Image 1 (cartoon, rainbow, N blue to C red):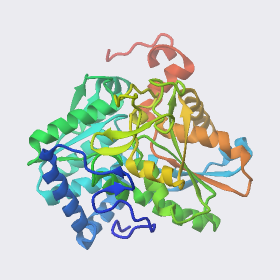
Image 2 (cartoon, helix red, strand yellow):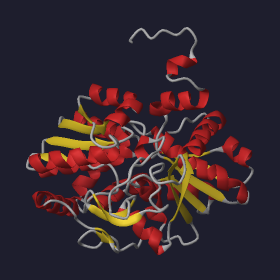
Image 3 (cartoon, rainbow, N blue to C red):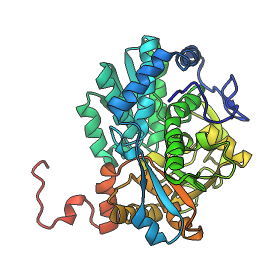
Length: 419
């Protein structure tokens, strides 16, 4: 897979990181040199066969690419409509698509001569991926994570610490992903000469949205080849969950020129579409600037960022990646939402029908498929990105689906010897 050769004819972003009116570089002057250096180094790396060869080798031998395309036979039969295929990013090392980008960026950090890595994380999967590549390459690693997210994603906090990372709890504001990004950026401003920030999604200042997209395009490149080999046709519909949007744009980008392929990104509808109860930026979001980029975000009429909510920590964010905003306004990609209850129902349904426990983030995309599959013909195909596995979410999902305040409540008489 070559990140140098786009798999679509898209001309965005431009040289200044703009996707139409979206994107750009809205950062403190202190960071402009680092971002310009990163942009220059990335431009050289993506046409360097040595860089590409090392990345491809690690993706195959260390990460586990290519990931399979799995026909969800029992789920398809249950829905009674289109054939459903899962792109199995959950089978990658560390359990989610995030490792694709973390690996690419650690190789860039080596080229930049930086020996310390920082990252933000919501659901913890990007934090785990970053801690993993830092352990492999011997880099110091600090991960910022909202205190609320640390509680609901305790397993991933432990994983990061086992991998040698320092996990810093962020207690400001809502204590979720937005605040974790804020703290990572504050760190970067003061340590920029020795530190590289491995941003985890297709958002933030240029060149991150472009760069993260390119490292994840392997998802769609593989999926396109695999479905053609298996079904001898392209899917009618692509589906992926959307927080910042890295897994979705990775799947969608190689299909952009395939005009008969419909694409739907699924945001977090939370408790319902009422301000403060969801994280669906296209449901009443406004154009604004947040954490380095111009995009749609959830804000009041004065531009103040509003509270968000999602059962999934990885989708609980007030803004969406600028490339998604661009393609939504262009009419090329559609966006819908799934509520907490719908995502939890899909989480349980796919687990029981397919023996695949998905991440709660992924379950939002699966919930949309649950709604739409029966309206499509049996000769049609839905390809949905299974962006991560749900080990990290089992405790949280179990208490909400089966009841109780902790997972131990599900086992009468259970005593936790570690408590």
